[in-house]
Image (cartoon, rainbow over the protein chains, first blue to last red):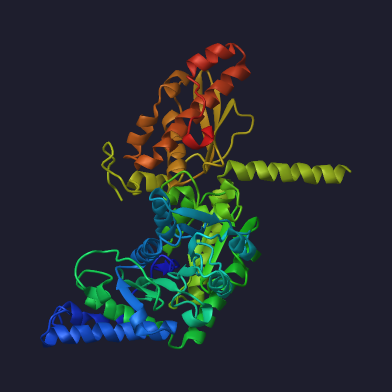
Length: 401
Length: 158
């Protein structure tokens, strides 16, 4: 096989239908949407149609949707925007330790600017504890920001319950749904979400474009200063092609949704089942039930994730790891540490994220190679050697008794 | 791939062809039964451990094997350094610097340079172990000769 792409949580291949829809806006439809003449007006219309598609997918009004340059910008805008708009009311924000850096770093920056942030821990499956959340709320709390589903371990947080707690205490609830949109059905009204971030390239749309939903009536400060685009909330001439692509992608994502999701989930379950059956000494990370359909995160004890990825790459397999060596620091993934994994086990984790194009043949190919690579790396690992020697000693002791 | 590391020019994680070649086909993997010396360095917490086994005859390293838990760079540095010390006298092996290992590999990304330090330390520890077993030198002399340092990665200090 040339390539098996199992890193759909990192990004996805843009759908051909999306590309086709975008192309005219990269050439003949070049008008500035703010212009009054025909090619400008038509592009304005294209943007508003895309906005309507996003609103339909999330069950909100189209005037509650704002386009941005991606998930990170959406998270920055909403968190900072709400924090500053309500700073007279309070300066306390609650988030979790397993958020994406776009949220964590924004919160850290706000701390430097005088805000007070609580970072909730999570249990061994990656769930925040609702009673802890409620206890953390104080007079000064203005915002709760908890991700919809975790990008590494796939765990889906109790969003509706968080929404209820937020409402009860009159605190805004923002959710980073970058991994969830397109993979899970989301009804912002039903779930009590006040704001939500999404990114097009996670659901077969183009890179460099995202959006956020923010409930009508929730104030937020403008993040990018300049012109009056996006109801004077996000300056800059609109990325028309990107926005059109996002609209098409979100529409496609929820077409035939149950069938696609079921297929992805079955492939994921098959992968996990095969790994469990054929490779000993592993740990499955994240909740078994409440997780993203295509996500699997498994730690292979006694080996290190980067060398695993490199060997998979040699076989044309694209996946991802929580090892320090892939994060550019000495520490393994903050998410794996937050769920209580010891460093040495966190280093040996492998995340695969299955998408709509993957097949059973591909999974079989991955399994065959994975079994062989893990065995080879273990045979090279001093930790494995020590472990096996210990096991032998134990067996001897049992036999002697 | 294939870029040469020149003093920080290579900022990304790209590996040279030589590194790829070594983690793809590592040389001298395994252990030596009744080794003359064994050196183990690193820490599972940091994500890399190297264990070096040497067989010494007439002051010369006649065989060397390694086991490594770690990233591609850790495996490649272990592999190439075993090649570089095989057949060498103990003094020659002790003179091998981590920079020699890096150069032989056609460079390493900056954040992976510590892997080459680990390889150098593993060789020194294995030779020190040999001297200890031999029993001719005092611990002070061994430390001096093998320039043993305490492993000093930021993380292990904590």
